[in-house]
Amino acid sequence: MSESDALPPHLVLSSPQRVLRQQQEFTSLEEKPQFPGASADFVDKLDFIQPNVISGIPIYRVMDRQGQIINPDEDPQLAQEQVLSLQTHDPLPQTIAGSVPSTRGKGRPPWCFPHVEPAPPWPEMTGYRGRQPEPSLQFTRLPQPPWCPLIPIRSPCYSRAEPHNRAQRQSPAHLAGRGEGGSGPISPAPCTNPSPATLPAAVGAAYAFKRDNASRAVICYFGEGAASEGDAHAGFNFAATLECPILFFCRNNGYAISTPTSEQYRGDGIAARGPGYGIMSIRVDGNDVLAVYNATREARRRAIAENQPFLIEAMTYRIGHHSTSDDSSAYRSVDEVNYWDKQDHPISRLRHHMVGRGWWDEEQEKSWRKKSRKRVMEAFEQAERKLKPSPQHLFSDVYCEMPSHLQKQQEALARHLRLYGEHYPLEHFEK
Ligand SMILES: Cc1ncc(C[n+]2csc(CCOP(=O)(O)OP(=O)(O)O)c2C)c(N)n1
Image 1: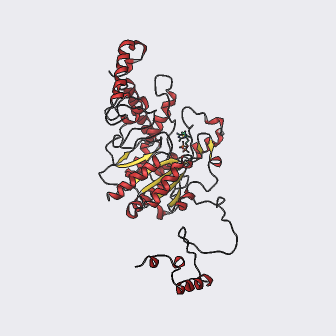
Image 2: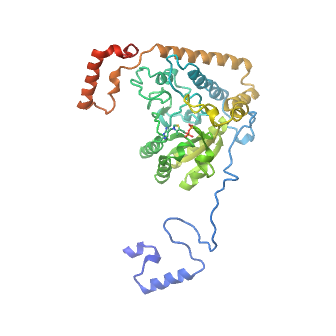
């Protein structure tokens, strides 16, 4: 094949016949645009495309606010024990989150997120049965996976020494890394604070899975505020062009600290951005655990089968303050918060559903609350009794091996502490 044969016809000017044919095509009413950048028809009327923000992408739900299944075809038919595990693991992070702020100022965690996000779509609840860990990369707020013992959750909050978490250096709630959280099928990647730096990293992990033919997918959680960052754009576009098996899970809870969504974006939320990147997208009711489950399960199945990214925007509401450093009554009304807390809460909705099925009652509720509070309190007490890691760990893991200049600094600190140790709270640290 000559070089000119490989070119689109309108670029080939070598022979008069060809030029003639080309001109005929150009004057034909049937002509099609030839631009490489998009596949589209011509129009002869000036018309700007309007963003469709008045009636947006619809919100998929399975249960109504009373926990009734709306369309029986969409009922995922989970077994009683699966639904119970969804419900009963929720009060745990709720209790942890609720306890942390109330215990501030007593040598307890200095800072934390005082709430958890509703309806965590655990991949093991979405049909994942493999033995390999599955990374789930996310930004800062990790609700507690049901398989995860409390120790790795509470220790980072206290910066305590643990074998899996030798030197927790991050602020509370930034849970440590891969495979260290427990023995279950998910492997959470370390949380980082700069949002959403994990997003393109998650895409890279998904690309590696694809190359390994691993039949695995990555799920990456982030807030609607984080979606405004440049890294979100990079991640979405790479995932689409490199055809990566990844689920982008955006929690749209209406606020990024004090910034309401009206100041965050002017389009139809985050879901509407997906198709612009060529990403299959859906918006779900984030307070409906069954809707989140269905969407996540199907997206996971297709992401792996088809090697393509999926975007799920879970609509919810941030009931708690942004963090213990935030007083949200400075920028939103208590009535607004109360509406969501009392009228549209993921836990009460699932509870209604379970009560309706005869799977849960007042007695079970009371006894579970008591038990989970006891577990959390015991875990807190154990964590409080533990020492913090040795100050020497401040220098390890900066690089895989410690370079000589860091070693010198480490020795200098050791010397300093030998001379002036009484000025430091060394009794709280391992030797
Ligand atoms: C790059 C970067 N800028 C700013 C911050 C400070 N910050 C922490 S959380 C947050 C708001 C995040 O809002 P959103 O993504 O909607 O998540 P939400 O907290 O509502 O779940 C900001 C601005 C940060 N962590 N990283």
